Length: 114
Length: 110
Image (cartoon, rainbow over all chains, first blue to last red; front, side):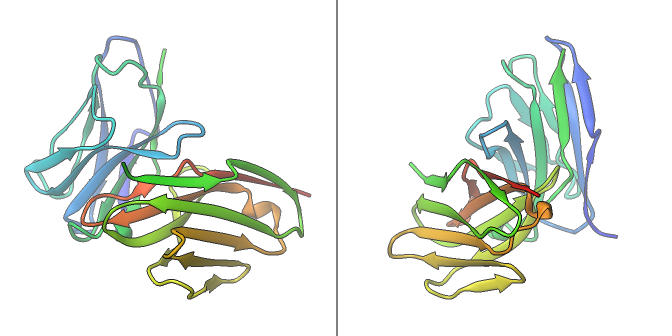
């Protein structure tokens, strides 16, 4: 079955630690996206990648980093510079760059800083 | 600055009621407007609208777009408890990622 897999589903981290969220897709999609969701805030774009080895900052990129070394994978690192990292993180992909309307979403990772 | 504004932000109705959710937008290079339903985790796609005045329908849900007034509505008739969710409106512009509104949290009580 094709789809997007995010792992882990739940993640706890101590303040000051970096943590990496995994996102893998086997849909052969070119474009991948990371969104953050807070209560009452909808989805806000962190980073996106339209093609391998290229990515762009979204609206709230500060304190995050990404890489796109393979088409299937777009991991997100939440660094210690992110002041308020507790949130629900969603990864998405779309078949071609420039057509984000065709996006498929993963099941999300809920990150809690303790 | 691009804006997608949804109203109301939350809504509580009784089973059987009809609800209308609103989404207004101001974006450059508009391509399409999308509605998603989010129950617990991943948003699931409901509708994509590109043309004014053409209603899209799926069971008890329907949606329409007004490109002159920059507005869309999502209607749900004969609501059921299973309709309880966050409904997200998003706009596709140019060749950049979707811009989302804050969502409307709908609670349907028996």
